[in-house]
Amino acid sequence: MVARFSQFLLALCILVSFSVASTAASARGLPELTDLIEQNSPAVVKINTVERSRASRNGGVPPQYQQDIPDIFRHLLEPRQRQQRPVASMGSGFIISKDGYVVTNNHVVDGADEVLVTLTDRREYEAKVVGTDPRSDLALLKVDADDLPSIRWGDSERIKVGEWVVAIGSPFGLDYSASAGIVSAMGRSIPNESRENYVPFIQTDVAINPGNSGGPLFNLNGEVVGINSQIYTRSGGSIGLSFAIPASLAQDVVAQLREKGRVDRGWLGVGIQDVDRKLAKAMGLGKPSGALVGQLEAGSPADKAGIKVGDIITRFDSEKISMSGDLPHVVGQTRPGAEVPVILMREGNEKRLKVRVGALPGDDDVQQASVSPQSSDIGGRLGLAVDDIPDSLKQRLGVESGVVVKQVVPGKAGANAGLRSGDIIAQLGFDQVESLADYQKIVKKLPKGELLPIRFFRGGQPTFRTIQIEED
Figure 1 (cartoon, one colour):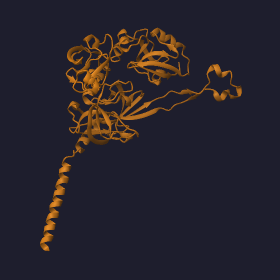
Figure 2 (figure 1 turned 45 degrees about the horizontal axis):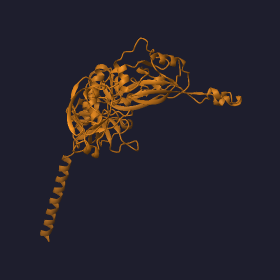
Figure 3 (figure 1 turned 90 degrees about the vertical axis):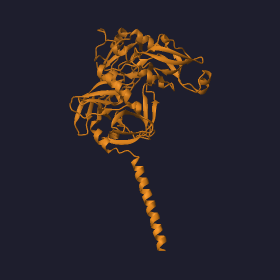
Figure 4 (figure 1 turned 90 degrees about the horizontal axis):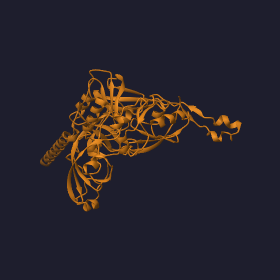
């Protein structure tokens, strides 16, 4: 009996030892994040913004119907001024240099009249917006300070699916919260509101929520490999699908914003689509791959290089094009003027061409065209500086008339309508805008206090909104 009991105890000890060893081995497989978070949190900032809204006029009866209203009811139907409260929002960001340059998302500061940056030690600074890039959803800020904590950029090109990453930010205003997870996928194509697609997003399962936007995504070396930008959700909170802008793209955008306040991108002038199984077979491909050219703009860089409708672009500047969404990512990061090799399939045969990349509309002609002396004064009735559209831009966007917005004054009618630098105004009220002179005449006669339609182009896409002049 004693012998059997001793054998039982021995077996139990072996089992416990094996369990402890297994647990320890499992624990050794998990990353230790405390040092990473402690060392990098001081360079992560909370960003609070304020957008002052103008008083809006509600109610009222159109003039043509006012004579039909009995006098006793007129006072009830008169338009009333409603003073709107300032709109506050928040996000995250991080310091990239000791002299106070801060990176965040464009949507965090878009339309803001005030931007306040707060550090972990509760120091607060008013920030100046150095430049923004809606296409990549990035913004560069500057605070007046020295010897600030800063982060190190990492190489996002070396990230692999399954790699551990860490986010630090202020979800729902909960300051400097850290969350961790793994990289779920690379190169995700997610079109923006203008249906443009220039960011190959890093997909992770890191818990990202409202307020994390603009915050850093770290690798285990404590280097920033991404900027948290979007989540996919049906509830408003994290469900394990978050998307970050790769550091490789962000560094290029930030450098251009810092140097010249704008971003120049490559442009081909083609409309593309994915290649399915049947098309691949018909085009002589072994499997679905590449970007099928379904539309070609006359006189575009692609047209000049000899690319034709029906071609399937499989490589661009030595980068493999597996899906159509890969092409805008590569072309957009190519500097305008560069001559690059292109490999494509045409009627079952491989062809090699060279194309001189153009400049994407809105990043070259729109930004670089100077405001002529005849341009409308900044701070005018709409708070817009505009100019005639360069002929080259008309051809690229397929527009024949209008004016291009060069600058938007915060708090004025144009800003309240959501207009941005680079938009092309084609209609004001019910009048077509043919030229700068046309625009100036139309603006002068616009009624005050009425909601009026405005039609403009953004990224080549037409948009209707309303605009209202509250003061002259």
